[in-house]
Image (cartoon, rainbow, N blue to C red; front, side, top):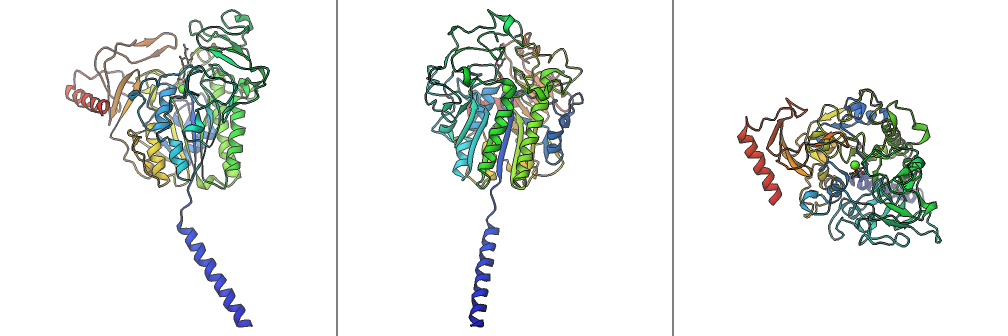
Length: 505
Ligand code: NG6
Ligand code: CA
């Protein structure tokens, strides 16, 4: 009897031991949280040199992780950068990937791999929460009052809680999966980008009703919602409309629920915050915090929100099995349509750091982004100079989770080790896009000739367009002030032909 018991105990022990060994050999897939913010500049964070504004939560991530100094978005505006991130292809290869109006149809192909399908196929629960701006539905004439599709769920996400376009464009509503949140049957939503619809006041006709003025000539003077003039006209959906002061808190609470609900599965959360894009209308607790006006306050709010996400991961003990990637879709702008103190209260802050240009610009500030990676397997307290683009995230995350890189993500390079900071060899070169194209290789940057305007007066940004070749040495001249094209014709030739090769590929 005693012997039998011993034998049973021994067998149970052996089985348990074997099983535990087998489990140990199977590496756990890390959760991935991609925090993608809107219009944050290279100089806007403490870890990137900002002194007039403090960003303690992101600075902590930089200290405990990897901070990139040559991380790029593909483009100097939102939609094309997001298109590249989703598809792993350069947006300038395809027509119709420019800044979309709020009623645009979905531009992400449904029959091709996306960053979300790749991770979903690898066993991940995938969610997108925040700003979308990649279009919804089959066409412009869509019914906002029934199921709105195709959208995020048709291109790889299991869950979505988004707003359609930008915070300054109608319809100013949240869409959860296929439905507008809080919509009532007797108050349907209609949207137009061509003519005024409905009887609601507009910023143009009733500027006295605005709580924040639109800047002259920018065109944010259509339907007034929450005291703010928008681009586009909207009627109906009164109770479904968002309150700008609650935008980020709403996204944050949805993100926390998504993380909590999926804590036992590997998950991919694409958390697309709207700060510091216009209209900047931070929550009351952040108003006045930065002393730099609402743009600074919005950055404080964004930094706090990132801290809340990290806190949630820590609370659920997921921090040691999650990789967090933080970056921005395009460079900074002060006056992008509203009089919100961004210009007047700048107080010496340099949103682009030492770089030239800003949002919309082919100069560096348009596409060189703050970029921080933190978490499982990520090097600590490292500054990486590796050249990497957001178009590489698709292939790099596929590699990180041991998945195959889909062929159609043709521009996406698998660089998971660079992302984690365990390798330093980045891309050989990258193409930058802001109307015209540029190419960066090593220290050199070549900008193709363009007939576009050199300067945008409305936003006070140097766009970088010139009718001739431009060549800059970014290590000696990070501010792109000395055009060396005439001095180094052979480098111009080399970069030009590389760019042509990429274009015709
Ligand atoms: C511009 C808007 C700007 C902003 C931008 C999109 C005007 C004059 N300006 O056309 O306010 O909405 O589009 O920003 O309408 S992005 O970050 O989504 O690309
Ligand atoms: Ca943007």
